Image (cartoon, rainbow, N blue to C red; front, top):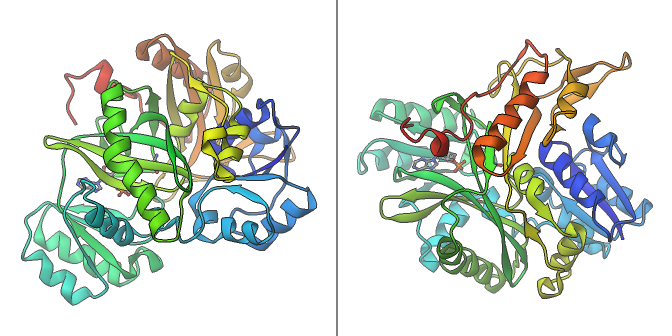
Length: 428
Ligand code: AMP
Ligand code: GLY
C-alpha cells in the first residue's frame, strides 16, 4: 500500500522507520518530516495543520492510508477531510479527538461512565472559577481546557498563586486554550503512559511506557512534552493491563461510539497510580512523544497493515504483532531554553559517531540541515538517543553512550532517566 505519515518529531522518525519496514508498504511519504526522516524515505514540506495541502498531497500521491502523528492535525480535522475523499486515515475525527482537545469533554465522559479520575469542575467564567477556589483545598490543579502542548497545567500551592493563574488564563496566557478552564483535585503517584489501538468500536492493548515530564534531574523545573522514557514498565503486569482495558479504555471507546463519534486511532491514557488505584490524568488521541519511540524500538510486526485494519474499522483482521522482551530507554536532547524559549540555530556535531553505537539509535526531532551540510537545532526537543538491552540498566547505559557521542554545547538533557526503577531510593 501507499502510506503518508504526517508530522516532524522524534515520534514520526520512529513511526517512519516502522512503516518503512512494514512488508505491506510499497511507498511511504512523510510530511513535513525532519532531516533524520529524509534519510529514510521520501518527504514533502506540507505543514501538519495545512489540511487542504495534506489532502491534495494524499490525492496526488494516490495514498491508501494516512497515519497522523501530532494532535494539531487531528484537532484541525484532517481525518474528517480525508474521509470526504474516501482516503483511509489512522487518527480520529475532530469530534473524536476532543478526548484530547477538550479536558472538560473528557472529564464529563469519565463522570458519566464511572472512569476513575480526579474530581473536577469546568468554568467558562473567571468569576465563577475564582469563587470555586474557596470551596477546595490546595494544591490547586488548574488546566486550560484546550490544546496547550503539555504546558496548559499549573499546580498552584497557594490561594494567591491559584487566583493569579486563573487571571492569567483569562488574560490569554494560553491563547484560546485558556478560554475555558478546569480546576481539579490534586493527585499523587507515579505516572504510566498506556496505549491502545482503536478501530472505532474495539480496542487492543499496544504497550506502555514511563515518561519524565520535568525539564531537569530529580523531577525539578517546568513541565515539558517529555524528557525521556522507557518501556516496558514494571507496572504493566497482565492484571494491570486487563484492569485498564476493562475500566478505562473499553468504556471510553463504547461511549464515543454511542455519541456517534467513534474513536479510531491511538487512545493514550495518561494514568496516575494513586494510593487508591489508577486514575486518569488525561487522554491523548495520538502516540506519546517520546513514548512512541521506545515502543517502536521493541515493535515486531507489520505496523502499516495493523493501522490500516484499524482505519477500516476491522481491528480483528489486523496481523499479529509483539513488543520484544528487550527494554528500550530514551533520552531527549533539548535546546537550552526549552520549554519556554528554546534557542534555535546552534550547531550539533557527532551525529555519525552517535548513530554507530551498537544497540543504539539516534532519532531526529527539531533539527534542520543547512546548505553547508551542518546539522542545527530548529526546535525545543531536538534529538532522541535510544538504547535497547536485556534490562533497563543496560538500555539506559547505551542511550547515554549515544548522548555522549553528540557534541552540542547549546543543548541539555537529563542524566537520571529510569531513576524510579534504577534508583528508587530517590524520591520525586
Ligand atoms: P496533563 O497535560 O493533563 O497531562 O498534565 C500534565 C502533568 O501535570 C501531568 O502529567 C501530571 O504530572 C500533572 N497533573 C495533571 N493533573 C494532575 C492532578 N490532578 N494532580 C496532580 N498532578 C497533575
Ligand atoms: N510525552 C507526553 C505526551 O506525548 O503527551
